[in-house]
Image (cartoon, rainbow, N blue to C red; front, side):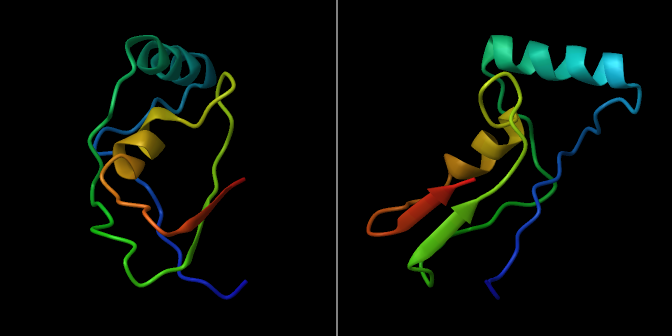
Length: 82
Protein backbone atom coordinates (compact mmCIF):
# COMPACT_ATOMS: atom_id res chain seq x y z
CA UNK A 1 0.00 0.00 0.00
CA UNK A 2 3.07 2.25 -0.04
CA UNK A 3 2.89 3.14 3.65
CA UNK A 4 5.59 3.55 6.25
CA UNK A 5 6.72 0.49 8.20
CA UNK A 6 7.70 0.19 11.84
CA UNK A 7 9.22 -3.09 13.02
CA UNK A 8 8.77 -4.04 16.65
CA UNK A 9 11.94 -5.49 18.18
CA UNK A 10 12.42 -6.56 21.77
CA UNK A 11 15.43 -5.69 23.93
CA UNK A 12 15.72 -9.35 24.95
CA UNK A 13 15.68 -11.76 22.04
CA UNK A 14 13.54 -14.86 22.10
CA UNK A 15 15.35 -18.20 22.08
CA UNK A 16 16.32 -19.52 18.66
CA UNK A 17 15.21 -22.96 19.84
CA UNK A 18 11.59 -23.35 18.76
CA UNK A 19 10.38 -25.14 21.88
CA UNK A 20 12.10 -22.70 24.26
CA UNK A 21 10.76 -19.77 22.25
CA UNK A 22 7.19 -21.02 22.50
CA UNK A 23 7.65 -21.55 26.25
CA UNK A 24 8.92 -17.98 26.65
CA UNK A 25 6.05 -16.59 24.60
CA UNK A 26 3.46 -18.68 26.43
CA UNK A 27 4.74 -17.40 29.76
CA UNK A 28 4.47 -13.81 28.52
CA UNK A 29 0.84 -14.41 27.54
CA UNK A 30 0.12 -16.05 30.89
CA UNK A 31 1.40 -13.05 32.90
CA UNK A 32 0.16 -10.44 30.37
CA UNK A 33 3.75 -9.18 29.97
CA UNK A 34 4.80 -6.06 28.14
CA UNK A 35 8.37 -6.75 27.00
CA UNK A 36 10.67 -3.77 26.59
CA UNK A 37 11.29 -2.73 22.99
CA UNK A 38 14.50 -1.42 21.42
CA UNK A 39 12.58 1.62 20.19
CA UNK A 40 9.02 2.90 20.26
CA UNK A 41 6.92 4.73 17.74
CA UNK A 42 6.06 8.02 19.47
CA UNK A 43 2.75 8.73 17.76
CA UNK A 44 0.56 8.10 14.73
CA UNK A 45 -0.65 11.69 14.44
CA UNK A 46 0.20 12.05 10.74
CA UNK A 47 -1.73 8.92 9.71
CA UNK A 48 -5.43 8.39 9.00
CA UNK A 49 -5.13 4.62 8.57
CA UNK A 50 -3.00 2.29 10.67
CA UNK A 51 -2.39 -1.37 9.85
CA UNK A 52 -1.27 -3.62 12.70
CA UNK A 53 0.25 -6.78 11.26
CA UNK A 54 1.85 -9.70 13.00
CA UNK A 55 1.66 -13.38 13.81
CA UNK A 56 -1.07 -14.97 15.90
CA UNK A 57 0.20 -16.55 19.12
CA UNK A 58 -2.50 -18.40 21.04
CA UNK A 59 -5.28 -16.34 19.49
CA UNK A 60 -3.67 -12.93 19.98
CA UNK A 61 -0.70 -10.82 18.97
CA UNK A 62 2.69 -11.42 20.60
CA UNK A 63 3.00 -9.40 23.80
CA UNK A 64 5.61 -6.99 22.32
CA UNK A 65 2.91 -5.71 19.95
CA UNK A 66 0.91 -4.61 22.98
CA UNK A 67 4.03 -2.96 24.45
CA UNK A 68 3.88 -0.60 21.47
CA UNK A 69 0.16 -0.30 20.87
CA UNK A 70 -0.71 0.76 24.41
CA UNK A 71 1.58 3.79 24.07
CA UNK A 72 -0.28 5.23 21.07
CA UNK A 73 -3.43 7.32 20.78
CA UNK A 74 -5.63 6.01 17.97
CA UNK A 75 -8.39 8.58 18.39
CA UNK A 76 -9.84 9.39 14.98
CA UNK A 77 -7.77 6.73 13.23
CA UNK A 78 -8.98 3.79 11.21
CA UNK A 79 -7.08 0.81 12.62
CA UNK A 80 -6.95 -2.43 10.64
CA UNK A 81 -5.63 -5.54 12.33
CA UNK A 82 -4.23 -8.26 10.11
